[in-house]
Length: 482
Image 1 (cartoon, rainbow, N blue to C red):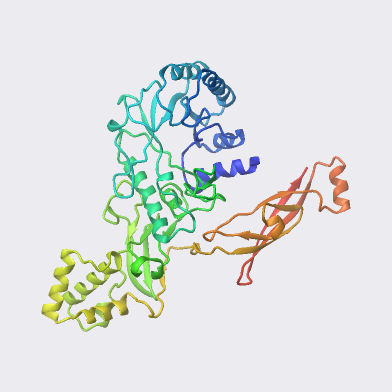
Image 2: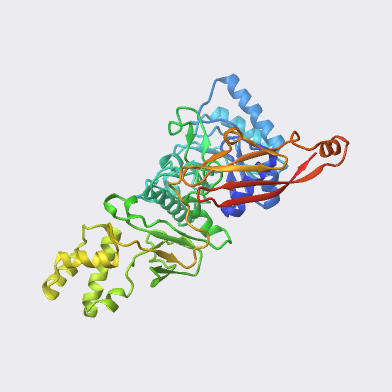
């Protein structure tokens, strides 16, 4: 990729996701990328190239050469705060790693040394114990504690990978899968923050990427990223944006289409927002105002802006429109909201309320079903519109997998399939188009100016996307030709 894309990636990490550090996993990156990290204050942990395998002596000698070249080439970048002097996820090899540590210390005694491990209690020759913690499975603690992993409690400890291959997620996966991906990242971030002796964590990974045939999803793509390959955010990206960016953010984790869920049960829906509060409306009627608290979503108490569980779809409507006592109205509301979130298998507390409604108020199952249809919604009923007043950017259409037409104007051309088809294929409502500048479509006068040792031409260009509803969206920019 050209320098512009290297710079863009650093800017996305810093400004869109709000991160303060990046691990280059597991080889040095473009100097353009590192230089941009220098400029914007994004810390970098960079490593000698390799993954798991350690070869024989000749191989080790070359690895030492690689390490020397990396440090000499990159040590003048102030953003780099730590060198990786082990082969990523390799086993202990004390003689080999004694050599690599000595090389790093001699060439740059000012920076910490680390080596990323996938095993606990490894021999620690470096300054920092760095470990890939993939222990979280969606239903347990987000990370292991330091004492259970490191071989030296006196030295710092960093988590260098989490999630990733444990839960690959495509942009067009079902809603529950995408939600689980988001919650897994939130849980790990939360639990790392709750451990005072863990220095921080690097999530796996920034974006989906091409891979070899044995490692992807059958299409040679690893869907481990919180962004897709074109840097479009998956819901998991909001786990980082919400706590660490200064941008106003509100994201609701469901499209509220019941047919997307088994048995039509939407399950838990969350508000992800850094707003002070979020007001929810149903068909124009105010339902509830939500705000952040320790009780808004148990298990996320260490986050500045924890996710908020939407627990009310009724508000005061039953009290206002039914001839019920206050207790009866509250019991019905509680049961209907519980079923909406949890399904029809009632808890003991909900069973007691249902029994009282039956005995004291003579209510039947048919009564409950009619109330559910009226106040929650059901198959074949009129559509329900939910509005959240802080939401600004509209919903992403995660199941839109069609192609859209693209038209290019000016001294630019498309790269890839769009060059032949004039179409950009979307996956999960997102996609990307790569373009490059070119001379061949310049007019004669412009070509003469460019060939006459002029400082360069700045010409306008436009990319227009034509959507199936006949609407067009254009992006205008300048192209400098030298």
